[in-house]
Image (cartoon, rainbow, N blue to C red; front, side, top):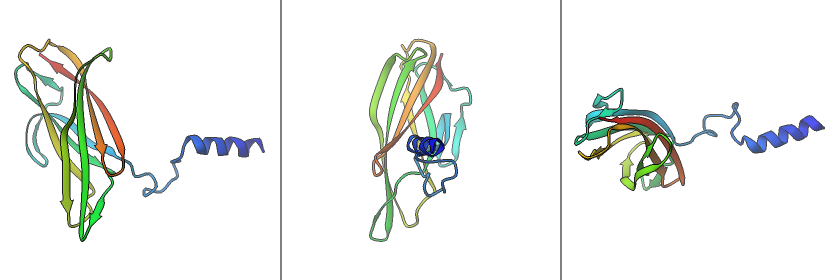
Length: 156
């Protein structure tokens, strides 16, 4: 009886167990996230693997997300994703934040497995040199869920 109680308790703590099917575990997730020097289009960008950006220049993030909710209207599928950006010190002090840097709405004839987009920030010439943490929050407006990704970035 004790094992049954423990199993029920654990199932309440972990609503998506490891043995759940793919349909049950669908959730907003980052399939790819990379810093870039420049973005020209889908899978067409110059990777900045160290995430180092000079002051006074533009820094890009190329992102691919999947697991978003799709709406349906007539014979079309659509998604609605909003993106927020923040910059923090290594200690977690927030220096800058902007909500809805990107408001993405896309329409499709067939349900897409993922979607890509990019965001950019113009780094001020006066920005202090140093290592920071960029916080990118992707919000699925149809599902009411969000994904927060933190990545180190260096300004020099």
